[in-house]
Length: 442
Image (cartoon, rainbow, N blue to C red; front, side):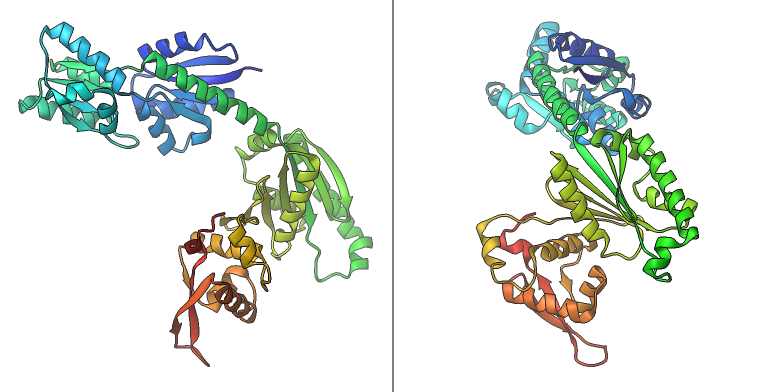
């Protein structure tokens, strides 16, 4: 198995990366050359299906692609430019000018990298005017930065990490030098991309079970639902939709019980399916063709047993909703709920540590409900809540929400911070959630 790596950058950088990459026999490097950083977006969109990991020549194309949402941090990396690379450029400038230049404009490289790589030179009064940005900055802004300093006489030459900037400043007859990645940095990046690639391949082969359960109609009795010809025809339409989904994810389907089906596939196949549609679309397709409502539970696992356990947990959460919903549970017990209105909520059912165990030893509520409240608090960006707020979050009664908040106060997970008046009866207590303040992390 070879990991397919898309190598993205200007021609000289790509050539260097390809030459170094020949030493890695388990990597298949595919070159993608651009003239301008902004071309990165279309390069990735057109070739994403054929690439496992992306390796960028520098931070500019990497963060540009990240900002456009065409890659994630898990499927890409870039070769950092460091103090050692800068030292090579200073030596090049000295040889070309036959004198020591002491004033430079410099983009991209951070001040700490200069301190690590150039301490002796910095001590001898070499001055750098830095444009050390985080993420992505358009080349036009960097060109203006260098031109302004040179034309005002504040620097003797410019040093840039971008080929576009180098070409523009050269055309304007401004002394300019370009930093390129060192071979050592390239080796580190290729090692990193190889590790990411192996992890990605492992995750893609991971087992996934997509569970689909028909939501029983409250207008029909159990016997009517079992023997009604209309319902039987609807179920056949539901099965037809599920068979199509099974074919698209290259899986196999099994009927577990009345109205429950399991589709067995892999994470990689499911991710490929979800590139074109969301999981909630399965519920939509079922209703369009069969006029039946369904809920979907997705369980990921390292083994079949793990996946089946997690799809069961997903159904437990899905059954709390009376509407079509998709709930996924991964191998780390992270629960994600996808609703039809596009709302997405994630939380963990597990908490770790002795303090956590001590708190819930004799508690009247479960760690799961507290974890869910914590996640909802982050989702709604609200830590001061009333029982009415919590009842709305949990889709429960105000009485149940009050009971939970009182118990959380007793456990030290919430405290009363005020009252809210303007309602019939007694004023409502306002509780400040304290979950994160006692060092408990999901």
